[in-house]
Length: 409
Image (cartoon, rainbow, N blue to C red):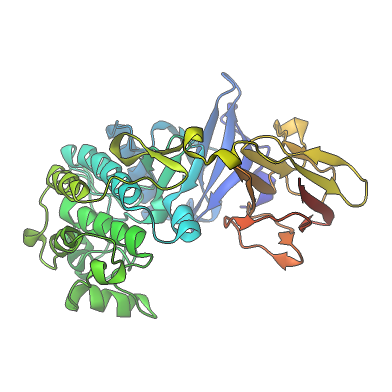
């Protein structure tokens, strides 16, 4: 399944207008509902696997479980169906990025912000726990953060509930090594909510320390460490954290499930106690919000930054000049047929419909490639997808074959 899916209409209703992400057996698209003009995310199973009974059952199970779960921190399902043997799940479109994206770009995260994210994940898992659902694949890639800093848990493809049969043979490794609990690594059948909470703690550890608690060259090496090695001291990796952070991690990452927090509510209570020991200071560009949410507060900026500089982008070949106004601009190629109208329209076939983002925060501008086919370059260097790079006055950008100069005055 490739680019020829763009423009296809599923069930005479959901028009696929862009690709959001691709996995081993399914691709997630941005789609427009032709009945009400709303934007959704549509997860489409690859046709190559439509006759694979195990994978199809897993896909259907994800839809079934999502239909049971209604919580602000779990992505909401709209519809499940198939169109000429092409199976799909329609879900709310989340305008944001994965937690992994922020961890890659920010490194060690502000403690209050990290705890706030972990708390929201646990709240979503509490809703799953109340329905007897175990996610079994909690990791930063499966946690979305929307534009209001609200966490959304996604990808319940490995989840199990009381009402669904297990599809995983005991000798098949499922999950992700950096975040998997010892008992889940040994046998996926034994995973319960305490395994999910172990994974949340491992994610929190990485948000705070900038690295997961156990590392290795291979998945097997990492899993062996998960099972056998003691929990490393997070306070040694980050000296500004209180000793209570070590105590929390020792319990949350205990080898035996019975030694951990037993329910999401216990986990949340412990997070709240830990938060009380974190100094209530603000990061320079952020203000505290409920449950650890962070929002940019213009009043927090220093007076000499009150007057924003003006930024422009000039296309070298044509001389077209774009005034960069707005905090997040899409660079791409207009396609009225698909309803795509980027903020900066570069009419060149080598430019993707959604090629890159230009971000602004105060007087700071960054560029981010959106997995474009013909790449984004900064001063000749090819950018890795979804990693923001700082822009300086005079920098040369290249979107496909279109060269442009960034100006900041």
